[in-house]
Length: 470
Image (cartoon, rainbow, N blue to C red; front, side):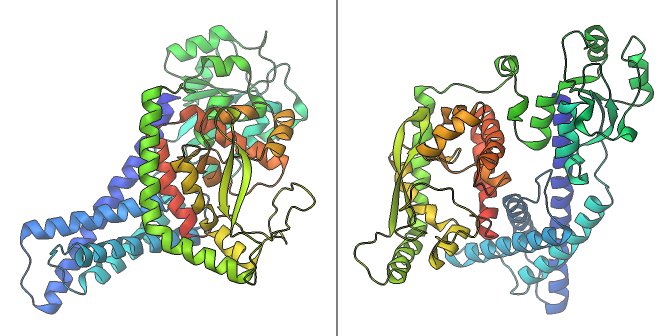
């Protein structure tokens, strides 16, 4: 698993380095073209290098913020082009902000940034076309075979059918094992009929198999432990389907979990007092920072909600509601009210897409997550973090704990304003949706770290920019 992760990281690093070199080269070309046309003296080598490096750095960071370096970006090529435009526009804006606000002299010709931005957009679109569509960066794909062809193995076939889902590996096929539930629906042409015996290693070597995924329905008495041990000793990766799905999809498949996997797997690290204090300090700092920039939007939102209500004094612009927090402790969440005041006169209900209870202003502030901004107060009170599973209502939690295994484990960390589940499964309004979100929430609980929090925080920019909120 670690070797496969290294290969995936290597591909991502190569992509960043290649695009970084391309952006820097085009920034240099843009400077050369402008100087030839304008007949102006060239800036010093130090200033030119600083301009190029700053522009390159800003484009790469912006590309990360809009998800362009996400290994399994689920987007059409038209969507990728749109993200490239937004990424370069962000870089352009920040460069202009640096020169105007911070009064840093960059010795830039007025036409330098537009020229460099145009060249970069064109080049990145072409580069992504050839690399993504023609598979130029598909080198190092892991060739793997699945040991099993029953219900557990069918999860791979159902969840990872598209080419973008298999960008990190090449699936050779499924090997049926005694005890498998053959009603799972795996097609006959995808089955590989080979005996898993002492000659199995020869089959793997002949077919350049680098990884074996264990996904049989019945393990006891069916797994060839000695054969798999021999494969592992000789450098062929052997991974459980839970680890494989976790690695490739960024989620934990809840319905496949067995207790021993949780006990022996890495992650699920415990909190301590020092870490809690550091975590609160960082969250409070960011909450105050965001509040300093967003308070005018919050004031305008409150005014618009008040106007839409017809200046009624009885209806509050805020919405307070009980939610379940860390270790099951209750707290009151604060949001801008996006529904009618009488939205729950008949009791608690799941929010649905196109919900008739949502007001006109509510639709807008939900789409761009503005309704969540008052929760900065919950962050300052220590009830929430910036990053974590979204807090759910106690009425729904009680129901979900009974229906979904391991659901209560998501309360082992503080709830957050943004989360891994919101990035990967943006809408949920049923028990089935809660199951899907739990798979990502448990992945976050297991892998919680400052680095993952920063990644989620940066990618949340994409949600705001493209209006992908609820």
